[in-house]
Length: 269
Ligand code: DGL
Image 1 (cartoon, helix red, strand yellow):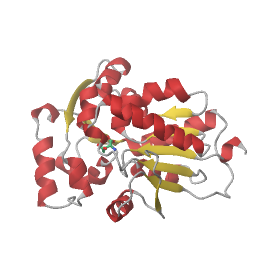
Image 2 (cartoon, rainbow, N blue to C red):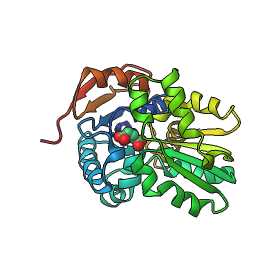
Image 3 (tube, rainbow, N blue to C red):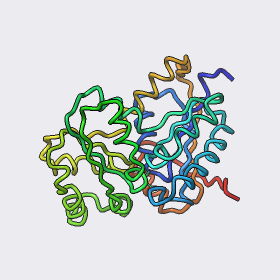
Image 4 (cartoon, rainbow, N blue to C red):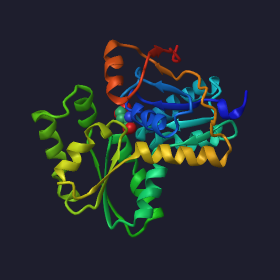
């Protein structure tokens, strides 16, 4: 098969990574996606780095079984835990892209004095954002904070109401975030509450959502590797989950603009 026609493999702990898949469809409409959401093991945000690494390797094998030309880790917790190890193991077979490095480069280019990062416990305790920003932009101060209630809050549909307002206000009132110029949404679920977060800061700071930044980086990588699909006769996108429920199907629609048909792929037995 022409290498350019091969699909892009995208994975996440569940359906939050569909925010990144959505951005890919907007920026690269000719590309086909094979998506895998590891709903049997979510949330990754509470798991150990070792466990997430193991899951990520198996999922990558699954996506390579669909002949993926590129593997995109559309999960911050997995990017923080497994990126280096996936790169080491699979870079001869497919390019590996994560959701953290493109955002770090974006922040470094902007030259902010002070930024905040919010994400899962796994992502924040890994120190990946602060370490990488410290290397790429040593003049930028980083305040990191885990905001673990945001994922279940979003999945339960508490987005524009008293519950979400109270949780958003409680987390974001932390004094560490009082003088920031930008806030990185270090979790692929958070773009869903991006407007509410901007509003909390009176639209005075830049809220950095990785989905678009990552999709643009993906396009650059595909261009530089001559892997961009320039044919408009596309195949079908495939969406797999390791555990299927109607609930996952319902929340998946909140994260992905477009047709979506979740199929169960039991890769764990
Ligand atoms: N998608 C995960 C992330 O970006 C959040 C959900 C989870 O904890 O599994 O970190």
